[in-house]
Image (tube, rainbow, N blue to C red; front, side, top):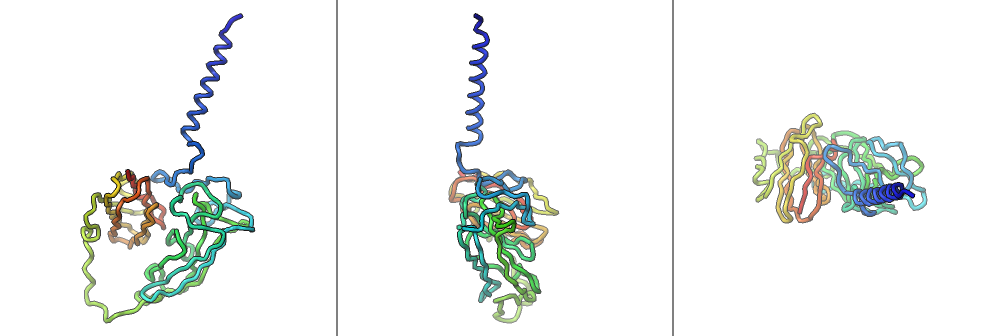
Length: 290
């Protein structure tokens, strides 16, 4: 009896096994999803099996992840005027914990971060219960400040088809007269001397210079490789007000329109960390620390 069919079957079986293990190697062995995404792509992973992932979005492009009302995340926000400038915001959460180290990974029950919005415009991403809101970020007049809870994969926690969020009214004062602002004397006749980039970024081992114009990043986003312990200076000029954020290090920097701003940090943690903007949600670079 010919043996060719049996050999053919064995060969096909062996190929199937090899393809299976290759797939396992490519997707990982049940490990947590990466906390970062490729430059220029959306940072929503929509991963994890918690709750029900809805097609509905929160108004900012994030899909809702609905969970039962019993034991669902809850949030309250209070805004207290700061004695120096702006407001101190306090988030009171229930059935929820902040997990900055796993942002970008799979959705885990009752875990994640929060977004802060002013009249529907995103101001910042929050990784803890306290946040200082400068008066300069709140225009004169009446506004609504909203905080919304998100899972690690950037889907919005929701109950009965509505995002888990809270809001408070906020009134901005005239320039220099926001909540808590006070003067220590007459305004100077000339503006103070701007801090030079060298002074703002002392002894930086690497410098990354980025320009944002018309929603585009120049140079194109890439990776900046660093050795652990090195200092990197991030020099960013944006054509509109925004906020710079470094994932994993929980570092933020306000970006005034048309002015270069510099954030210097020590790369004391190994891994891949994204540098992005809050308002425009642009990836500026990735810090690869070895």
